[in-house]
Image (tube, rainbow, N blue to C red):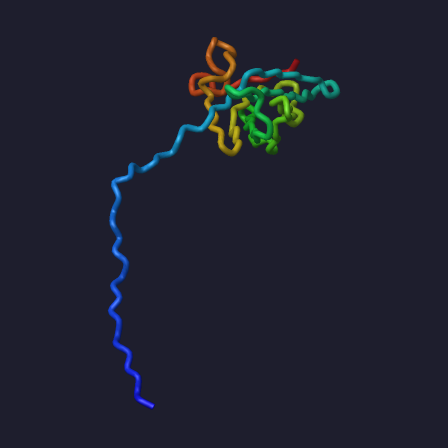
Amino acid sequence: AFPTTVAPTTSKPPTIIPTNEPTVGPTALPEMWVKTIEVSNRMKGRNKFKPTITLKIVSDAGNVRGATVILDWMRQGGTSDSTNPKSTTSIGKVTIKLPKFSINDVVEVTMNSVVKENFGYNSARNVKYENDCSLFSAECPIITIVKP
């Protein structure tokens, strides 16, 4: 048998050619906002009250289901905390119960977050509240709750 020789092959690495394709930037997410707010406030015994806040979250397409809402509260001159995360229902509503407060407490509530995948929260579109400015917006970040 005759010896077989194989000629070495020279292979070049693939050439990378830059393209002039435009870079696609992030697209604007659909906005969601607070359409309505209801604050109910019940006395608990003779010297405590317990506020409940119901919000309706909507978008241009309608009610937003599954948005997670967290509120922060602060007792003037005292303790503060965040509520547990709660999700909006199929009609965009979420009811958040605050703890019991003493009858003389003044409670300030602010929006911690409204989050849903593929949505952006726009507080400037929130329902007009006291002083004719948007609820939980930069102009009106706080709502104040006192005994009923």
